[in-house]
Image (cartoon, rainbow, N blue to C red; front, side, top):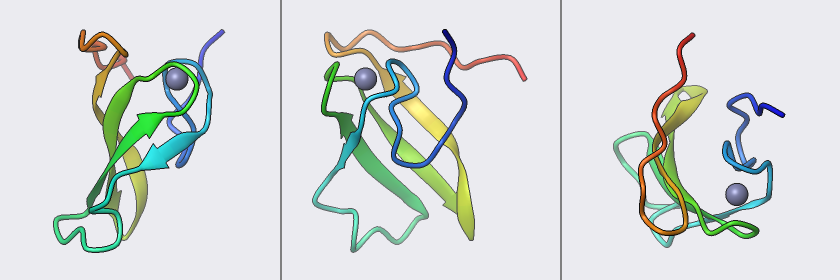
Amino acid sequence: MEFKDIAGVCPVCGGPLIYGENAVSSKNGSVDWTCQDCGATGKEVYREVFDSHQDVRLGDGRPVPPRET
Ligand SMILES: [Zn+2]
């Protein structure tokens, strides 16, 4: 099962994302998140609108390779 990059949805397991404390004050167009279900972390990058997930890591800290598009 594969998940597309969707705002608010974990790209690893499809679970709901919890946004970091910098969500409101973010100035560089990205918001850190943690997955509520699997503990993965990453950040959403915005270019006016949601663009993609970046720096995705599993709950144990292992990075998730970016998908080929
Ligand atoms: Zn997850």
